[in-house]
Image (tube, rainbow, N blue to C red; front, side, top):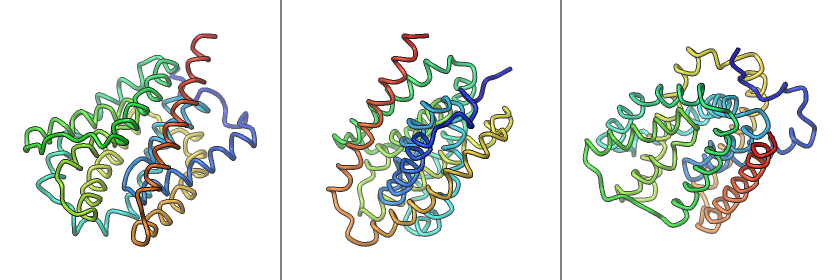
Length: 258
């Protein structure tokens, strides 16, 4: 039988639950402020506690709530010529990524998730951007993002790097980012459901994470509308990097001991 969760949720200590709660609020704040990055936090923390499949599923459900919060205000400013091709590629390749997640060794996936997340943090910190892509390139970029999203739940930064290549005002860039991340939030739902990943334990953990994530998203959106500044972005990336390093170390240790 497929092992969806590394251990029963009843074995989580109060310290672990506290870490999960703080990480959920921080993840939501980051999502509401810059439009992306929340999944990185949820995936890295939950994958260590409950395994990569549970982490991707819980992150997927968390993203649905933040999407409902952020999308209405972003629709007015997002560019359809950017978002629609990206969405097409994302939905086409996400099921393949989900298949990889299900069949791969869970310990290897934990290491891969933490490693990829760290690479994406470095990419975001350095402001790496692609040349402004055409429609075909956008479909391809969406496919890559969807594949990574399905396999590791952290396809957002790849899509964001493409979104930032469009230029425009901060408001327009953020709207494009939210459009791209919305596609990533939705593309995993059907494949995960068809593969039976949304189990009772996944739903219980999501009930803990989702409200905290939603509260963080609300405060993050308020911060963006008010005195948002680059200092927080750098601090957020530093926090993501720290989480990635710690979770990678824990995953490597568990893999070497096993």
